[in-house]
Image (cartoon, rainbow, N blue to C red):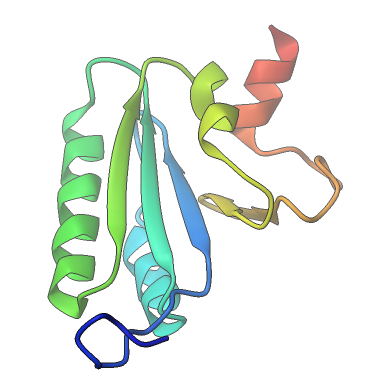
Amino acid sequence: MASSHGTQAARSTGRTFVIAGPNPSGEIPAITRAIAAQRGELVVLATGWPPTPAQQQLIGEAMRHFADLGLPVGARLLYSEDEIEDHLRPGDTIIVPSVVQSLDEPAFPAAPSPAYAAAERR
């Protein structure tokens, strides 16, 4: 894809959402490296208000890592898990540490992610 300045711009492979509850997992560095290797876009959705120190640290690390690589990254603070689906579109990948699911797959394969399981109980 050419930019308006005649240089080539790399197109990202898709959006990956990491759902960060109040105590996000230590798997995040490995997840961000895998997304960066695919030149994808990372969006961290931190649930709950106010954000915990662990969520703030995770968001900061992800933003620094992706900014250093020149890759798209974003973070959104959500009041509750009920708002997660408002940010998703077909083709997005959702990661809840230890659970990975694409929106192109069935909604709840064998075991739903903790975020969606909690939303279903409400």
